[in-house]
Length: 277
Image (cartoon, rainbow, N blue to C red; front, side):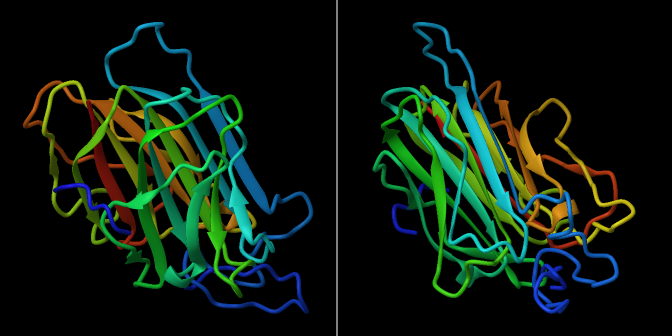
């Protein structure tokens, strides 16, 4: 598919009057909720940069980052930590998971790059939660690059997460696919368009597994894939994970299957996108 140039029960934090509010990405139960409890962060984030060979020609992951906020955490703009990225020429993929499609206003970075949608906004988790994928081609980078999900007015306390993969040596999107009908994999496998590309999987389970006694539900990437980052649903923040793999040849069929410690709902989401030279 071509790159397109144009773009519950959840636990809402019982911070206010002990009220339980129903949402989209996780279970909201005042007896079980840990969102906003003492010692539980309202914001989780991480970023990693890799040292690339001086004259690397192959497509390679140069950096990745993520950020997530728990439901009830008032955060109008959700941003990743800063990370070092190539000064020029990178292909940047940004994926978001939001409490509802209405949560998202825009995706941006601090260097002025333009992010265009790959496909359109999609839904999952009984069609209540939203997910979208963006790309910036030939992006400017630097030592302190960061990315932000700007929330729409009235949605500052919505749970959300943001995932970024920066690819050196990639200049275009090849094949891509989306599915919201399978718990761990894709409805339609992706077929790669060239050798030496990297395919990134962004997985967003409709995960209602968090509880006070066993809040964590770590996710495992498909066999042979490199895990970038994840936020399980223990803190009720539109959980997800991302991973990547290098494809050996054009025409390779990929149907990645994620795993979880505990079961998740059947209608999670998966974006699969090929970054190519």
